[in-house]
Length: 304
Ligand code: SF4
Ligand code: SF4
Image 1: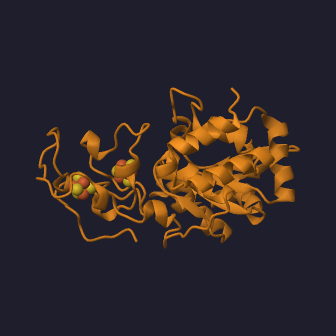
Image 2 (image 1 turned 90 degrees about the vertical axis):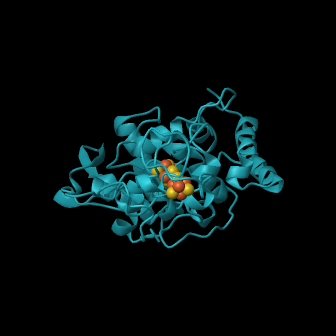
Image 3 (image 1 turned 180 degrees about the vertical axis):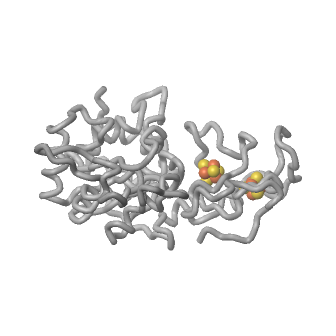
């Protein structure tokens, strides 16, 4: 499916508020995409469930573009993604290996980096008959990337793969490379959060990161601050419609994300709307044990 420049701009226009784009930004974006084939993006997938890719692929619209992946493949010059790219095997590995020499690309990393067993628990690709560990691929590609985006908590902080007992020694990309990473937190992240970061980089617009490497524009407020149920009667049992879920262990007060504003599944609903307490999936310490504790209330921990 071909996505035209107009299609991409229409997506950005529809999501302009969520993406923080002004009319001038949209014009600049149009000029940029009209004059170049877009910056090269390489997307590596390591120790993960691939849920971040799936969340992104699930961007579905009744009008074109039907998925965010279409946008990346056709307009943002996504040259490497193990699931989305047309090529495979040695040819696919060659694309990544060639990029690792030339540099200047945006590196997107999904999944944590296993470091035990010499990194042998996760092989990124085989090139010229030699297995390349994910750890080695991330280190080499990060060293020459113009920017590094960690999509999801696994690459940003270790996430679920780094949870106890973490037999494969999973670490975050920043811990393994020593580089600053733009952490699009979440398990998985909202598609708009990732698109927001890509658009800022395309427009060369500086943006600040919080102490956990998350864009402050997206993760500056707590879920609780923006929740429409704030101040309502607290629910003490599951299955009861409406009302604040704090007594059921909701972690909205400790969790930074704008879910109440962007909503999920094409802005249809989100956790609290579905009567499910926030489990703090954008927090660096996610997943906690237990995920929530009934009666814990807001607690005192702040993820920052
Ligand atoms: S505790 Fe949870 S349900 Fe209650 S207002 Fe805060 S975010 Fe909303
Ligand atoms: S409401 Fe909480 S658990 Fe749900 S997606 Fe947002 S941050 Fe994650």
